[in-house]
Length: 171
Image (cartoon, rainbow, N blue to C red; front, top):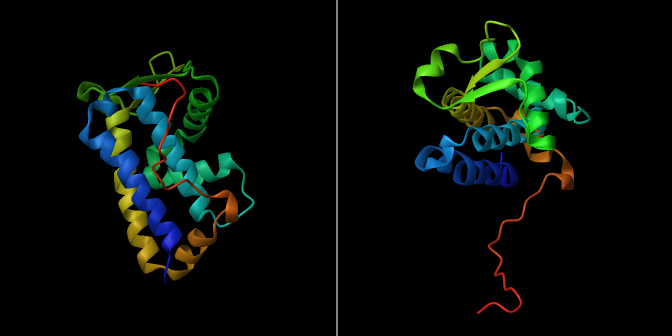
């Protein structure tokens, strides 16, 4: 099945999200990493959720479980974190870290049970695995590919150009 819209979207995510997080120091910013990946999780949930009228939280959690069972167990905390970062630019319920030494505690609660530890490198690695699996599934499953290609109608779009910007009084 020909899926130009879906193929382009996956290419854009690879180019503008995964590659920069993998190949630059961007991933050292836990905030940026989580926010970018949550946006991708939202978008992929919209692509593949079987109910085209599913709300954003349902779509987010639907794709989130593809990252592994620990994500499913923490889906409500991760949804709250996504909302806190996206809507308030504040994180009050999770401890974010990108350092390797915290990867052993990834998605575990603090001793007081109040905070979730999220290792953003683990999140990125798990996301990349889910991304690659999704890409394979889309090429092998015509029904899923058709759903993704038709997801969101016109509301699921992006600008694919590099505009020339000029500013008044700029030298």
